Amino acid sequence: MLTSMNRAARFFDIEYANYDEDIPVLEAFAQRTGGPVLELGCGTGRTLIPLARSGFDITGVDMSPEMLGIAATKARAARVAKRVNLIEGSYADAPLEGQFAFAYIVMNTFLHLLTQEDQLRALRHWREHLTPSGLLLIDVFQPDVAVLAGIDGSLIHDHTWTDPSNGMSMMKWVTTEVDLARQMMHVTMIYDEVSADGELRRNLVPYDIRYLWRYEAELLLDKAGFELETIYGGWDLSPFESGSDRMILLARRK
Image (tube, helix red, strand yellow):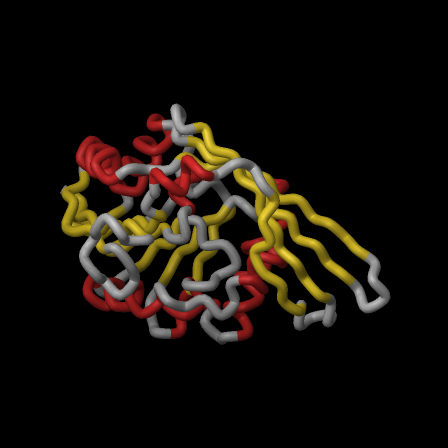
């Protein structure tokens, strides 16, 4: 897993550089609580840097040194390094100092916890580092039974873009297999780099995730010592409904 994430760091940073749909909501909850803020699985700092730029002291945890290296470079370039604390380690149990008023984990990162034991251990660890009544936000996709049943392992072209650092054409492919009984998805992301003379370099990033149903999530939060405040169906804070793409859970420490 760590090797895969290190390998994906550069591609992830370029691919999601312009994705900012979640940032206004995260900033609003950081403002509501006043901080300090904790991001679990911070990657290359996509959300961490904007929150630090908005004046919040923020700690980011990630197991990939390559990802954290990019985040640190961004923090220095944005002149917010003094407000940013980066911790290398598993977001499930990395040692943390102090308490946080708001913690969040976005973009399905919670789903990399593959067992109920891992999920509860992580939730209880995060709870211990939240202030009384501190908030935790978890952002995952809502499983769609029809879509899951139709996944057959086919290779699917995701999209193509140009790497601004070297001008090379980048193509992303994805193949997915589903184990319905275990709620597991076995995913391989394939990043093809094509140079101007047509030379191809292929990079494979395999990983597993365990998708989560609504009431399963609610039980996990309750068992870990959280009280669910609300569930949103998207970053527009729309109600969570059958057709919602996202399941954004906002919970408070009991």
